[in-house]
Length: 222
Figure 1: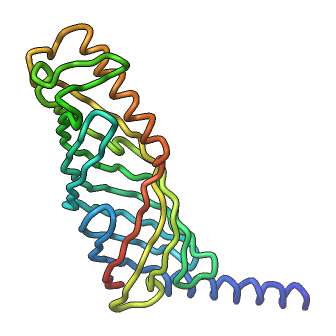
Figure 2: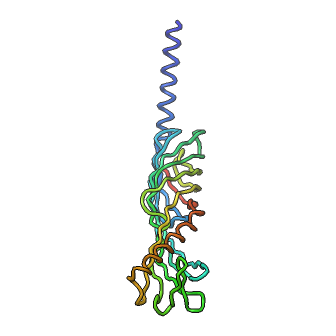
Figure 3: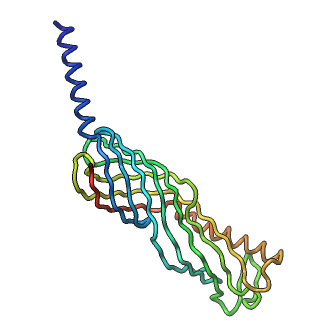
């Protein structure tokens, strides 16, 4: 009798688990907008507790400037990112935790001009603006695969339309490249000091080692 009861309970639990898996075996498509741009997301929830998500966003542009003691920098920053994430629904509901990898494309074309009386100073050495011209280069906030952690709210447990949000952080890896447009470009002394300026700007950016991720979207679950 005990064996029969145990077998019956096991079969019942198996049936419930299968029913739960069937109830949550859903695919969600979404249109998203956020701090990495505008795009689409595809999410598959394999059971009540686990899911995977792939997303692509792009076409977010910023214009900004930054001043040091000697240089006024202006840049146009383009932002986009792809992501592949594993989602954990700890309560088998809407709330989830997520972790994965992002492939960001966050670069700015930068122009630097003297904000002093016609001089640039790099690594303790002074250069006349007429010989330097402008500084032109590239600022990369993040490139290559970067780790990501976040949490969100998604109605992937039922069919139909829904609204979702996700918030998290992605690590950054800032790189700066600078070149002069004037006649001094290419001289060994200036190139050495320009590399020192690049390193200084990168060190200042270390205070911003994480990029905030925020996304809102409209979804449909099949």
